[in-house]
Image (cartoon, rainbow, N blue to C red):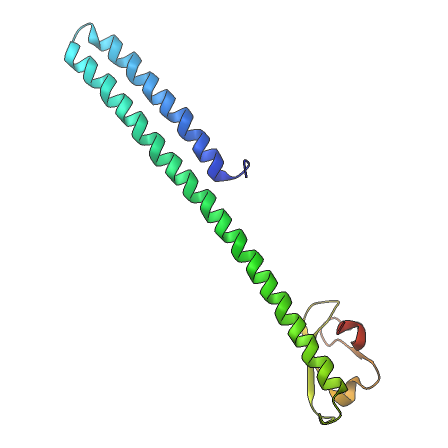
Length: 147
């Protein structure tokens, strides 16, 4: 996951905090000659700002990385649910085709293997073994589509 935006934000946190800290030290040292207390406050405040910015940016980067992980898990779960649903649909369509008690006018639904659209035909229309998809107009071998 090194190429994620979250990882880049965490890298930026390191660079930004180092630059802020160095800037504070250089500014504080240049001011300390004239006003000791002000120079020390600039150094201390700058270092504190560097530490706070580091933690805020690192936390945000981690949040982005975790969001990416959650989104990927969700995508995988959703894809597996869709595959399971398609398998159940194919199984139900096969059963309807083979079941002699299902009337010839009963509709059987399955996805077109060419365009992916859900198509629906009566049992009697499928008797020939193939149908024409109304969406992409390809000849669909029903037994192959239901494998």
